[in-house]
Length: 307
Image (cartoon, helix red, strand yellow):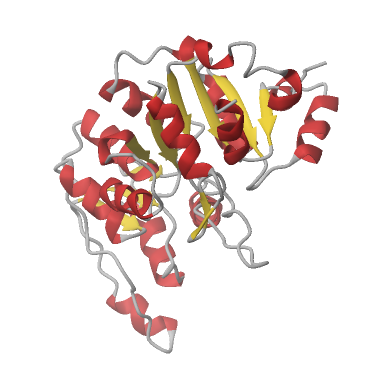
């Protein structure tokens, strides 16, 4: 049966755990903060790891901010991280399109931040933001025009997602040559103030339900985001790298898919009960979600590192 020792109980840190690691990939939402609330001890732990000579990269599926915006948020919380040490799903998607020499326009269901990341890669797109609808659908359907230069539909978290945007996205995707990409398919963010905050997954599911097309997913746990990291840091050795996160199906699976060590923190989406259920499974794909280690919080790891 797959095991998953609690980091502190296993004595792993005292047994030279840190000597096995040169690179740390760390998630953000649910690990460093929940919403705008920093999780105690997380900033200090990141700084301790860097001070001990570890190369730390933040890896997030949240495509609503640019790398520079994330760097500013980290600075506000006292986290010593620069923009080039941050990899968002929006950056990974932009990197993917650039690597494919994409030269058409993109239709974005998402934020201005995603558009900015695309622009930095030389990729043009239609304007983003609200697309208001008139009172009757026949009125706006008659006025819908599609740009013949659009060659990709991109799905991200879109706070202004509506019927008209869905209509346009699906209509562009009638053309089999039009690419369908998504920053991620996360169902929701970690619970904030007892509310379920939907993620990109519901947007992707709506488009898929109409078009029956599956997107190229560029965020965790899929290859494009890890390939973007390795392209920028070719010295990254998977055998000396750990992935830290709060989601089994994105963070931990990214680590497993790339032969990294994995550590689940219990301050976000998944918990010990989820791990125990997976450990009982006889299916490889579920067993593969069991992390190598778990710990209550990133802050707890920081305390152990100071012993």
